[in-house]
Amino acid sequence: MPHPKKERTFVIIKPDGVQRGLVGEIIQRYERTGLKLVGMRFGVADEKKFWVHYNKDDAWFLKKGTKIAEDKKANGLPSDKEPLEYGKDIIRQLVKFMTSGPVLMMVWEGNQAALVIKKITGDTEPATSDVGTIRGDLTLDSYNIAAVDDRAVRNLIHCSESAEEAAREIAIWFTDAEMTEYRHINEQILYDVNLDGILE
Image 1: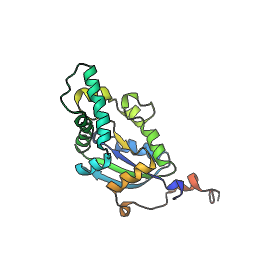
Image 2: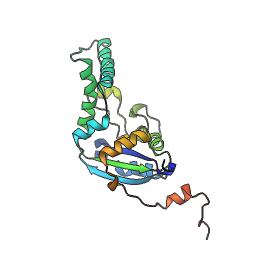
Image 3: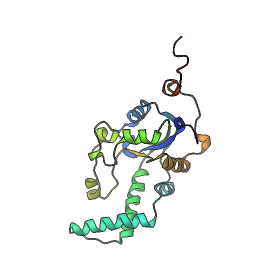
Image 4: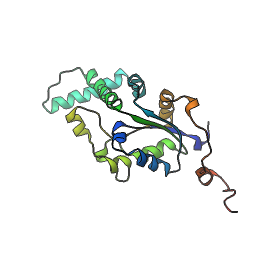
């Protein structure tokens, strides 16, 4: 097992974050925690890779699609698809959105990197995300308006839920050779057990 300070997580600044000029602020919020940026790629991403990235199976599609069909029925709306297709529509909308413009993909490294990034990013729905988080402070989209407009929620960022999920996602988008191993000056104050060399 690697040292806890070597934990890595995966982040995508989505097309809305890029288009709104928030890349610098988002990176700065992550950097200020002491996490280290070790991988980065900018551009329009591959659609097929996003289907692999979202990693959903028919059981997931059916569960989500059944809920959508039930909600439509409860609200007196027509249900013109099988539940499985409604479930697949969720990922179709996400993939359409994520390939609609350039994105910035990043790998961050540090103690509890996945948890730290997730905490700073905030909950998936911006409208209910806490003040102080990136989503809570910098955008206002909601599940409701996304559903009305039949599109994915525009919440600026994708971030891995756990270190294990991050490892799977990183392997889709980056090779080991694309990771940069280096010593960041912050690591001494964050991790050096004895703070050797602080005093002259």
